[in-house]
Length: 299
Image (cartoon, rainbow, N blue to C red; front, top):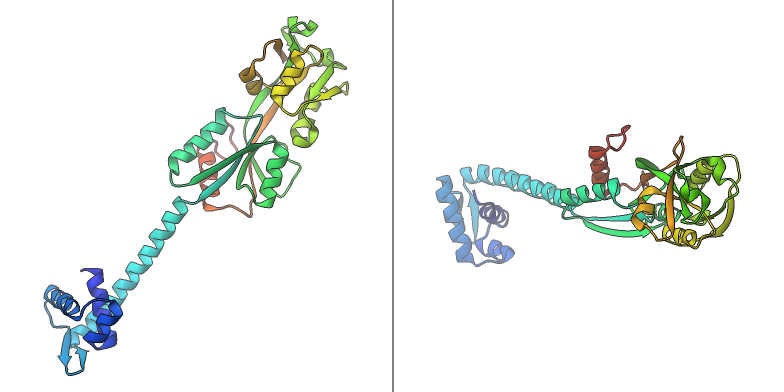
C-alpha cells in the first residue's frame, strides 16, 4: 500500500471532513476523493461513509485506520533509524599527524578509513606531539598521531608501530667511517636536538637510549628533523633521528649510521580522549583494530 495514501486516509478520519482534510493536506478536495477511492479499490471495501457536512468511518474503515496509523508509525521509526545510520556514516573527523612520522602504518590506517567511510569529512593538521596532545584535551582534535610515551593519563594511546633511531653524522666525521656505533662513541659528542617541549616523551626516550649514562652534550636546538640534518651537514654536530624520516630526507653531507644492540627505537601511536569518542572516531578505532588487533603489533 502507498504510505502517502494511508496518510491521507488517516487525516480524513481525524478531520471527518473532506474540506478540512484537504486544507490540512494542502491538496484539492477532488484529489483527496480520488486517492480515497483508489485505496478502497485496493482494499476491496468502503472505508468512509459520506454524509451531509461530515463523513464517518465504516466498520472496515475503523480497523483500517488503526492499522494505517501503526504502519505509518513503523515507517516513521524506520526512516528515523535509517537517517541516524546515514548521519553516523557521514560526519567529520578532525585528525592531527605528528611531524616526524608519515607513511607506513600511519598512512595505511588513514587510507583504510577513507575507503570504508567515504562520506566522512576528514580534516587534518600536522604538528608536534605536545600540541597534538593539547588539541585532544581541548577538543580541537578527535584523534592524533603522537610519539609515546605520553605524560598525560587522561588520554588513551594505542601504539601502532616502532622504528629504529639512527645516528646522523657529518660525512667527514670519524664515525662516518664506522659500520655500527656504540653508545660509548657518542658520549660528549656535540649534539643537536629539537626542543623537549615539542614532545617530552620522545625526547626523554631518545636521550635515555642513545645516551643512557649521561654524556648528552646538547649544544644546539633546531625546530624539526630536516633542520637537525641540515645542522649535521654543516659538520659540527650529530643527531639521533627516526630512520623513516632520516632516509626520506637524505641530505647531502650527512651519513646515517646504525647503533649496536640493543637497537634504540621510538614508537608511533594513535591517541584520543576516551570521553569524546564520536561515531567517526569509533570507526577509525575499528580500522585500527582490523589492522592491529588490541594487544597485537604492527607487521
